[in-house]
Amino acid sequence: VKELRKIAAETDVIPLKVTKFSSFYPTSNVIYLKGEPNETLERLHERLHSGILADKSEYVFVPHITIGRDLPNAEYADVYGQLRMQNVHFEETVDRFHLLYQLENGSWTVYETFLVGGKEQE
Image 1 (cartoon, rainbow, N blue to C red):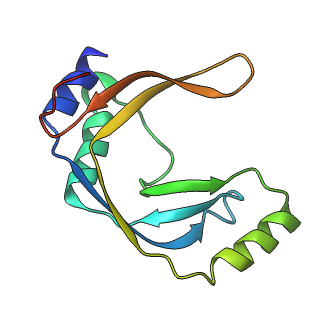
Image 2: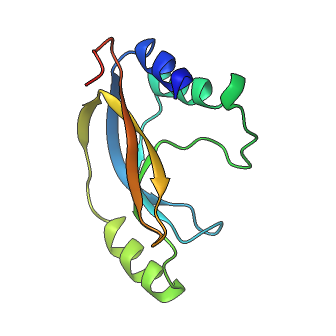
């Protein structure tokens, strides 16, 4: 947690631009909103996966917001077929990230929130 606080304190607010629906198919039946890569987000990802937090991910970093996952093939095809025709464009400024943990029932909850952009921790 100490390292995450340090990373957050040294990270600028993150501009996020979402431009379309996309999918990780055929690797998995995940539908997501595609976030456009930017230097701040890439740098944060690198810092969160280096040093004492280092891991070897088998996947390339793809900025995204998951909409649906583990969908049966027919449902995936139907939902993605409809969503990919939609025009999407919104922009947001992200000023925090969360450390989550999984509960016994499989749901996730926030353990701690880390503010970026030099903001004081709540």
